[in-house]
Image 1 (cartoon, rainbow, N blue to C red):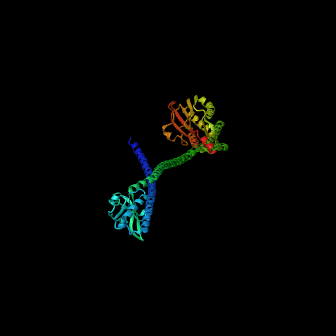
Image 2: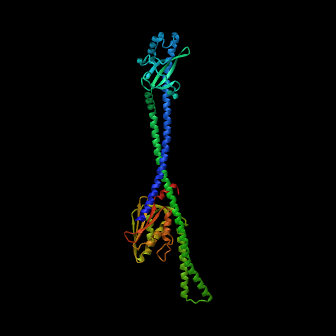
Image 3: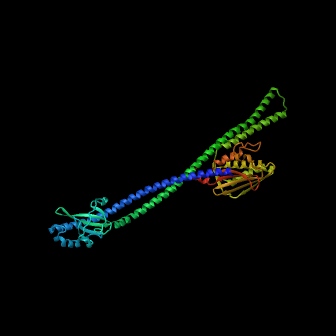
Length: 473
């Protein structure tokens, strides 16, 4: 058991490592998309804040400047002495009542002397009180000059405001300042309202982008795994082909050497007979010549099977009804099986299935499987042939009552020159598999659960015809 646990642990470790690598890559890409999107959103939100804030400040400053212009005009026309003098006190209060409604509703509006005394305020209770001058550090430069952030008990009533100052002049001298205070909370709420739509849009874009990155990461990883799998399959197929080629060369040399040695020996004997150096009867000479002919036919048969394995013959793929080809093959081979007391039973479950393949190759596959089954039952028996369709594949199952395949050669059953029969070449099943590889088919062996002998299952993709016709081949 421990021998199986270690490989399983190794496979789990490999899978875990791949998962961590994929997760790390997707996490890094997702984080990068989030950071870029977050930066873009904050940049736009800041732009909206500056735009809305500047717009409100400009509007308040415009109202204040118009009010200051009217104050200054009245001061010059009445030849008043300046802000805060006794002569101007009543006029200023009356004038304040007439212009303060020109301002939009804000936290406060006020007129302040240069010494900090409040001459007029939207809250009459603070008239005459003094305010602390604004510090330069409280300036809000992004909203322009003379804009401060302030909060005190006299001027702002403990409300945090953005205070906009407009100087009041008389005879080109500054005699006071006009204040308009915008509540920071009110300004922030207005900015937040303008930002909310953009923030929702950016959030949706970032979320969708992250989802797309995750999906694309998984898809690309899947494609990469498929590409690696295909590369491994091609590598294994190439290695298998090289191994089979080596086996083929060795087997070919062995299979051809024996007939050639026999023919050479017979020719040498014939030469001695012609020279009178050897005496053979007419029967012995005829038997020697017949043996040479049989060996030549054996080599010819071997070459024919090798040509089938190498797929050098002309191929003419077309749509073929497999059930019809099975019936034709059975009709051809049954006369050779009946003398051996072998019966063949055909069960057709799907008669309408067609595949795209060379008709001659299909028949050769069927005949090879039927011949192998017949050779496995020298004392007679039974062969079951079943044809059916399973999803996108057609399956041909050939079972027999023979002894099955020896355990020692099962792993090499479809390699060239692997056989359990002394007279066999071991190329039949190798040729079958080679032909099936060309059409994305497959062949498998297992012990038959019904007849007890060998059972070969051949799988054909039945959708190849549609793909070929669609691609115009």
